[in-house]
Image 1 (cartoon, one colour):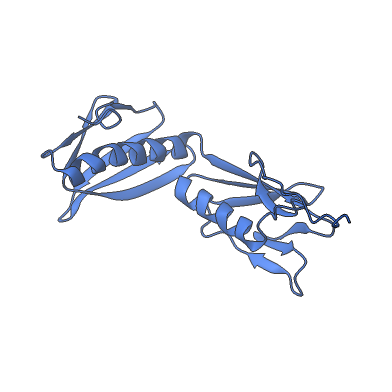
Image 2 (spheres, rainbow, N blue to C red):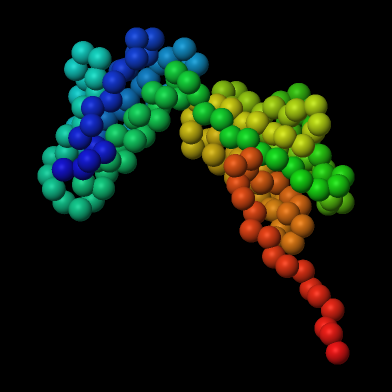
Length: 186
């Protein structure tokens, strides 16, 4: 039995969960104070709602089904966390002349290229904020995957380099620094 999958998921008071069957599996719609999320899950995992909890059971003990058990539970739990609390990623910009600005909902990055890089949020629930110093970016949203993907894309515009640490990094990321060249002694 999956240690993660067997744990029931508690449903908070302000959250509404609707489970419907489809030809592929089950569709779960979760509504909360921050928004609404919907996702499809495979038929190998049975999702049932009892009072204020969601329970998951698997139909057999094949390897694929065992791996889906914990995954499905984690995805459902993240959906509930998203509509109640939301998710957040912080990015820092390091380097002289590197900066970020907001133009409406669009993020415009000046990262030392010959042109500015423009990034738009993928949906209306995902928000991008830039602080006054123009070197700190905060991404918030209700879908954990969307927030993480957007943060990873923004980071990929100019990854931090190991010699001076210049670029875009996650706020909690540690950059392993390398020693630069040194002149040969004779």
